Length: 304
Image 1: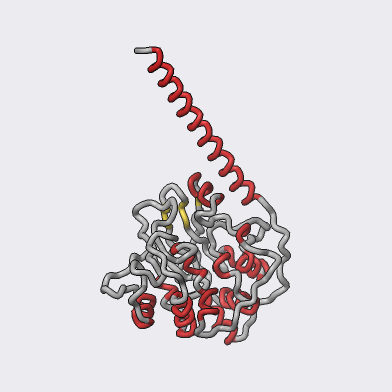
Image 2 (image 1 turned 90 degrees about the horizontal axis):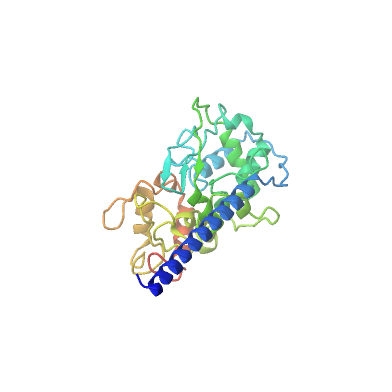
């Protein structure tokens, strides 16, 4: 072998070696940052609230827990709130929500601690909850948070052991790169509280509701593959008025999709889409969400 060729191969080997070392260092730094963030104890006081026994408050809480807050979704806490199904997200995470009835975490948390968890993503021990989409509903006004707590206190106890959730190396990296949200509390503003408009069938109110969609459909709601997700997970649809999205859709088309899980062309949605809670949106919420989606700029599928 010629000397020049040997030198080139050595240089290539050195470059590859440096690349491997750099990648390993990157992984170590990002996973360490994730772990350190989860160990952080947040100085967020427990609110002084008590669950209400008012039937109207409890009814409001039931609506929220089984619709906007998504607590009863099969992939979350489940219809009986005793812990949902396990979702394997490839090399990212094994996701499963715990039993939150009185037989488990519901008994461990005070009313105030439960309200703090819902509003701030901060657990009983002051550390961040994982994956729970608090950042999508942190705008809910205090009375709605109290309503959810009040309803949860009426849910029958379920004797079922909570299963562990695991965040894997790729999940930690994607979280630190803001591709997905697993470390929740650091995404919530614990000082400034938002004041949403009162519920109305308007784009202004729909803009708040649409946050529930961003975890899967992306910041611009244009869908496309979820970063790091295995090919077994379905590709979220484009919700913008683009040719690849909802350009020619009517409200009735959208309402049918959200209530039944059946697309305009008759094809059913993948069960990954939480129709079991979305179908419970009331008419005001559904019209508001649609009104907001129609204000979006058209973005081709995959623009996230």
